[in-house]
Image 1 (cartoon, rainbow, N blue to C red):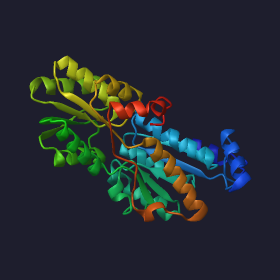
Image 2 (cartoon, rainbow, N blue to C red):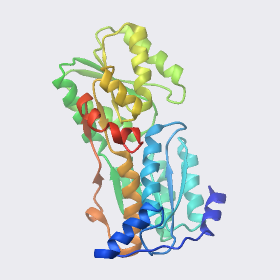
Image 3 (tube, rainbow, N blue to C red):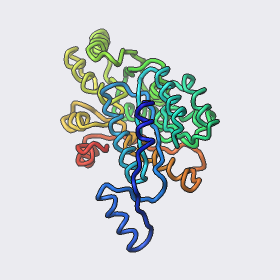
Length: 326
């Protein structure tokens, strides 16, 4: 990431901008042509997340961030690693390159605490995204953008109860991720039935399927299985079918595969936290802060979810899901 940042720091791009009347039309035209819609300096923002390889959720976050960056005349640099130590090193690289803003997810907040503090001390504004809302302000970030994971989990527990479910399994694919723990804890809190956690090795999908299949075979009374990420939902469906289980499969997050499975009835519901919005707003808020010292929401978390999406809602979102923005 250091080399990439060094390269983009030397890049320049002329911008054009205006507000009101005819100038607003010129701005829209510039955006349509792929030119920035503002005349502010060519700032560099770095986003560092805990995404694992192949996680479609973070593709959508990046899409939103990149489109906001194009509009705001921003050099956007992205790095990710599911290991917190490497994630912290990427943030340190961004500090060393003297970027103009940092966006970071805090799935394992303690591992990022010191390096976020370094960024703030260096005068680099920080926005946290997706995970770590409880620690964001404490660590000195301007604001947090994402869903409250406890509240999202509670929405799931309530929905499972409405569907008459009695025994559920919450599948955690990344041990140590505080957001995942909060989701399952929230679901347990409001679920009228019983729920237990199942920890799996998220980087090994065959192992994930085997673990879920074994759980369902061992306990035929399980009538709901909840995955915490869209890529794991089809694996849960395979595990259910292989186990001969009638459990309903539900999931957090949307992608095209999840939308198809919602439409076919293979999935019961999904929880959308609008990842495109998380990426887009993170870049936009950093730009607003640098340009005009604005902080949306007075520094309190800006919520992007949860929304319970069923087959009917997925059909309405089909156009956006196909283009990779939902």
